[in-house]
Length: 129
Image (cartoon, rainbow, N blue to C red; front, side):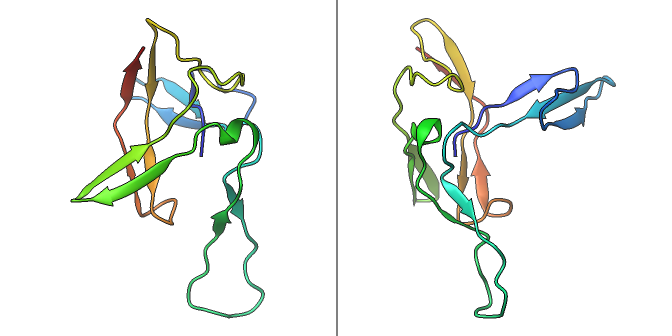
């Protein structure tokens, strides 16, 4: 899933979560998903019991800006390896262009069939081109 983080000191008009800093200030963080069709689809709860566990989300087929990264991950020898090719400039306004001499901060979260419990999150990674 391709998202962007927006940090603001003032409450934005769009959906965001507030976080109180140790110095008493508040930071608002919005994490909008890229435009287009998402990679995940939320499915309705079953109307009757069929099995012990049913996934809340099923894999969708992303389109538009949400499809400009096709990630592939593997767990091997106690470590994740994730590769995700992307154009340096996708042409979408919700994506940062990777330009020579410019640095971009990013992070990666790897989910194992579960959004909240079974996932790993990398520290902030700084890419310099």
